[in-house]
Amino acid sequence: MMRGQACAQLGDADLALEALTIAARLSGGNSKPISLRGYLLATLGKLKDARQVLGMLDDVSRNRYVPPYAMALVLAGLGEHDSVFESLDQAYAARDVHLIFLTVDSKWDPYRTDPRFDALLARCNFAGLVGSRPSTSS
Figure 1 (cartoon, rainbow, N blue to C red):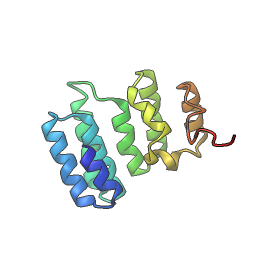
Figure 2 (cartoon, rainbow, N blue to C red):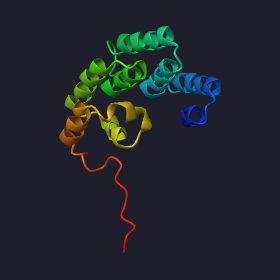
Figure 3 (spheres, one colour):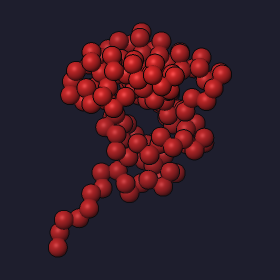
Figure 4 (cartoon, rainbow, N blue to C red):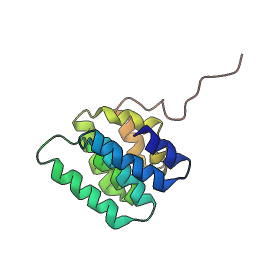
């Protein structure tokens, strides 16, 4: 999974998708590599494939827990702002541990200007964490 994320950041989408597919298989279908793959597919303009991933996560959620954050991530790649915030609200209600990534993951940058994002960070008690860096002044 980490290889897939690194390859995506380096701009090698094909290798990233391959690594995330392998990670999903080796993890027994863990939602994290699956949702990352869906996000990447969406950002590459492969919307039909990304929606298939979203549908697969929805199907899996009928039999086992899928963190709402996983759904939000794919929706974020698709640019579906209202649905993203619905899923993030569900993640908050479920106390989804993945919400901590909202403060540091650049995938959420397009959502940072939305007042709902700031409100969610405040509810999570993360409000002062985004973009904060230790002071270097003496």
